[in-house]
Image 1: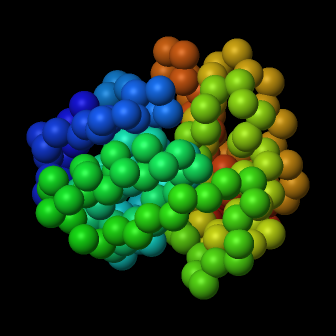
Image 2: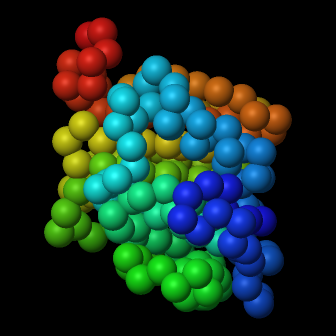
Length: 197
């Protein structure tokens, strides 16, 4: 895997020793499609760039999504994963590209402690068929990790039956092979984002 665009374009992203069983990376094809959707889609960043965005990469694995956001101008990224091997892998990838606008948290995304700040862009890429997406959304909301007007990018297997809990709302949904990508907001943020209520 490599970073697709931005200041770190072409830099390699590795899984890291021992991370193979703990990490299922988003394919380069799906990752590029996600970032094109964010940059140019009607319900993406709403005409804004990644500049100044505080990004959260949950179930981060190799860190490919968060590192791509940093390469494209994000201010800072927090990487969260329950697997020690995954955190070690993304830490090594950040060090390799000499990126220090990063933080790491080994934690269960379903039981997060309260956050000191909200994040503007959140990637949620849990293991397929693990039933983790809805509990992670609830935990992020309850514990204050989601900034007002934030955009959440969630990925799951296209064959999974996913129920998005309240107060969240899906504004766009795309299929990229096996990967289903949903753009999610808090329903009360619709008016602020310029979407019809």
